[in-house]
Structure formats: structure tokens, C-alpha cells
Length: 410
Ligand SMILES: [Zn+2]
Image (cartoon, rainbow, N blue to C red; front, side, top):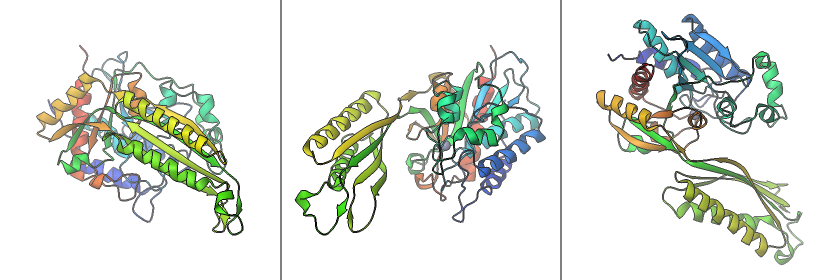
């Protein structure tokens, strides 16, 4: 038996959620643990309460909404994503997975469908990692990849600690986080890349995720006046910065599947007539093959060491800050996604996730996969982020199909 979600209800909720923290450009700003994030959760929980789903929350603020199954002892099927956004976020990243999950639960209720296993709809805290690092924090804590006490020490730009926000929202009164012995985890998400749209595919069958390595680089020289000091006598970090940029770009262009990004550069003090005393930057390296990512990492480290030797006038420091290894999703679940797309006549293709997702943390604990739908021009983390209503509905229908297969016992 196949069921269809109510695409109009899902779309209306996506648009209603987007109004919370709405930005003038048409996107949303609900950074993790902010008042806007909390308001978004309240809106969501109101919809859930109206259907009577049992609600739990853990000490990092992850929300779990349960639709009971026939067998309360059976491990639940987990579905979900996140409601927090980037400061200039869009209306679909994360929100789609959560609200499509709610749509799955409600569709089952509307049709009075009983499932063997319970279904837990998860909202993971701080997936984006823009206000508090690291990203994918709530799922990381729930899956044991991150330590609760360590993440509590994280501070935002204003110096506010994550722990104080947890107390402010009352999450500290919740029990210690523990992930149930789940049957599997499924996450619907926009692709955040241009491939599905370019190939006119509705469904991305996600086979896994790229490995990611993050670094903070600092180049320290000596601040001096832009006029009197001859070029040869300066301890200027900027020429070295240029070499670091070239190195990162060369690594990125050495392999078609490699992705290398310098997302942030800061010169201090940052004045037109001062040779900067210091340059700081972030580097993000990604590849779907762990061995190649390792080689990229070594080439980067060796290149920086050589640069440091070649420029004794400056201090070059590289600090690796994060490593998320390559993730392979569960082949049985992947096949179920393919079967659903085939049954529904939806064009699909296999795809590797370029972005990080909560599903990467879950994949280390339970069989996991993701479903992608196209987003216009591949744009995300941007107010212009857009997924067409028909694709949103199609993705939710595939999620529903896979949930129905996975909730079956025996
Ligand atoms: Zn996301």
C-alpha cells in the first residue's frame, strides 16, 4: 500500500516557519539557541502537540517526537534534521527534513496507518555551527561523537557560552542525552549543490558523504607604517597569505572531486596605511575518498611547512580544528530509496553529499541514509535558497515510502 503526503500542508508549514527570523532578503535567521531558534521550535512543537505526539528533549536541546508503533519495545525508526539556520539562511535547509518528517507522521495518522515500530522525529540542535562550533553538535552529542561538557564551553562572538543558553532555555533540567537503540535514521534534505537540477533528477539517492578537514591558519609578522619601511625590511604576512591561497587552490584543482575553500581571511589591525601584523584564515578541505583527503591534508601541511621555512620573517601556524571522515550510508536503505523513486516514476541518481549533515553522526551509530531534492541553481545558505513545491512533495513521499518499509518487523 502506498500513501501520499499532503504537499500543500507541508509547503504552508515551510513558509510559516520561514517567517520566524525572516530576513528582508526573503530568507531566515534562526541561529542555534537564539530566541528565533526557540520560537521556531515552539511553532513546530505546537503543530506536534495538536497531534498528540509524545515529546522528549535532551540536555543539548535535541527534540524527539514519538509516533507510537504497535510494538513499543521495538527500536524506533528515526527521521529528522534541524531547524536552526545560518545568519543569512534560506527556508529549506534542515527545515525541510523536519517538516517533511512531521508530514510523514501526520499522513500516517490521517490514513489511520499503524506501524510495527515507533517513529521518532528528531530535531537536532545546532547543525549549522555558525554561532557555536562545532557544527552538527546536537547529533554529535547524541551519538557520542562529542562530549557534552566540552560543547557546553563553546562561546559565540558576543562571548555568551553555550551552557548559559542551555540554562536560559531550560534544557539543563532534561536527562542526560541517550540515543535509543534505533532501527535506522533517514534524513530528507535539499541537495545544496547544482547536480540534480542540471540533470533534471527529482531524487538524489545519497550514498554517503565527503570527508571534511578544517584548519585555522595564522601568519604573524610585525605591524608597521606603510610609508617609511622598505619592502625588503618588512615582516608582512600578506605575501605569505598569497602563497597559502595558491597552495589551497592548487590542491583543489588537482582532483576533480576535491573541494578546497578559504572562507574567512582577517588582517589586523586592518588599516589602509598599516602593514598588518597578523593574518588569520580558515581552510576547508573535502573529498569523497578518505585516502585522497589524507593525501590532500599531507600536501597542505608539507606546503605550509615549506612556506614557513622560506619565510623566516614570519610565524606560520596551522591548527587542524575538525575532521569528519568519509561516510558510507547503508546499502539496504539506499536500495529502498531507489525502489521508492522507481515505483513513483521519479527520475533519480546516486549522489555523494558535499555538505556535512547530522546523518553523518547518526551513520556511525545506526544504519542511515539521506534523500536529496534539487534546489534552484544549487544555492543554499542564502536567502535565495529555493526548492520547488513538486520536488518538496516528491521527497517527502519517498521519505514516507522508506519509513513504511523500515517500520515493518519481520
Ligand atoms: Zn542542513
